[in-house]
Length: 379
Image 1 (cartoon, rainbow, N blue to C red):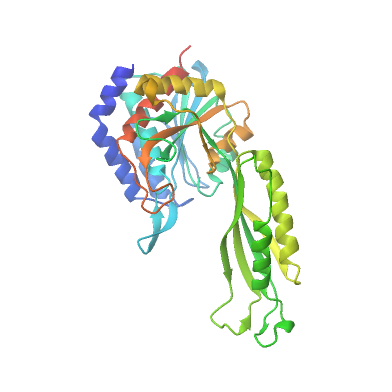
Image 2: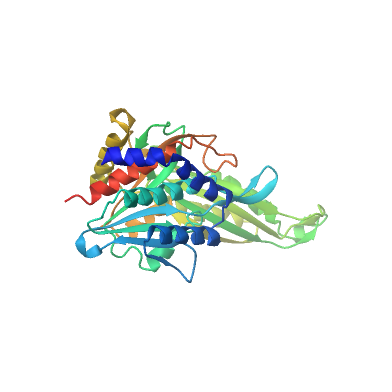
């Protein structure tokens, strides 16, 4: 079957790239992916695959096959873009590769359909919204999309620092990520009478120092840092009474994240309120660390070797980046789930406004996903 897949992908390489360019040029941010969802629905109609979209939010799920005949396999792609400053203009920008992920999943299904493959079971083709918000996976879980899924595949383009073009990994071990937002309430006063006010900037300074002083076991990968501060207005002679700040917290293991969050919250509240200010802190988004599925990773590894050869397979990628893909396994522990890491020579890095990669990697991703899907339905 690999020969037929290779031939189809090679013959359709320009179509694959044109699909990518469509997604790339029509980027939409989290929960606003309406045109993207409409386009995907039209592709399902063309492929004669039944699909379900949602009244409450964007995203779409296609259903190919019959769950009574065998396992239910989910293939998931994220569909949202980042809101980013690009060459002086704020715009939706696919700098995390979601345009590539949609392209590869869509053409994996197109390839298998055109080659006459019939799944002995059900394939759920999941185009998930709002990955960047950390809430998209949870939304589909709430809609019951994952209730009957046995195995789940994802794929993600990787920066050149992790994998080179022509390499692929059967898993990406993302770390846990939590994004915190804080607010400080003080009291305004004239700059000449600071004793009559409570300076929110003083609280900010204390919080920054306290957060930077948080320590964890150095043998366990983690980090915490202030990434956003806002305070004061145009008048420099006013003691500011309000400030906001953001904190990015990361850990490679979920239990380390739990410990780190307790320490960060204590540091923020105790230091920020020492001058009498009122400090609030809330979680804007959180993503958990990956939990390995060794059996599925082994099968994906076989597909990578068949598609690319023995020299192409790489060890699982370990990255401090976050991915809401891993929530699926948290809420459904029985699911065998893995996210394929695809070498693309991606530079300068993910989330860079001018992120770029070798588009020939799209064809490789389709081949790996197609081979893996076929293997998952073998008796």
